[in-house]
Image: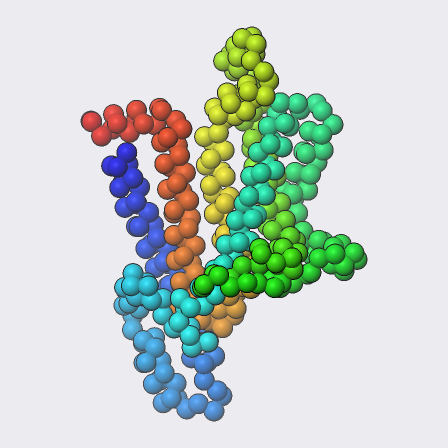
Length: 328
């Protein structure tokens, strides 16, 4: 098990560094940050001096190496646009994005898995057909359109929920949360539903297809023949054996929730890291862009690592295969 973890961890570090280097090189072409930092009256000498101070004249790999060494020490550089440490900006925005992503992930799993199981066990029921119809809308409609529709219905027409912002937040040390106030929860509902809808319908359809396949297996029929109650057969025997491919897709989709919260945060003006990233791209703020992409790649890699470990725990065939490879 330890050898497996070390192997996956070394691969994860290599992936993170590669993604960070590519992002760091690509976003040098977004725009010249010096133009956004100085006024129109700045002379060429002043621009060149600022460029030299920022280290922009160094080769890309030198700048990236400096960035990685700083990141390893907890320093992500200084924002070109705001003149503040990127780590401080992330600390301010991270709670908003994580709360939005965690609630969206919870909604996607809490509704997607049970709906998928019921749609697979009872495919001819009216409720199952309703689930499939909802999933069709969830898969087809892009998140920004879902967000705009929700704003139009619940904010503009009914005036039940706010259309932007995070509501009233409470500080708990460096963490700020809106989950302890009524206005915070009201502000959280529409963006979290928007972000969760696509993931929920995708998980539901995947669970349904896996359940339909597993329910035709002999061991499930044998469990029914033994007189076990359907609830136990469906959730303990069938779902357990259908869970491995579900773990794969669910892990990737949870990562997508965090990475692609950008669109939802932009639509709802949610003060999270996605909105910070969009603003950084507009101004060519390379330290913020590179740090954000590095953080997202770390999240993806961690989620994939957790998925791999779950495979290892759930599926005994993988443990046997890995042991054989180590012995060979």
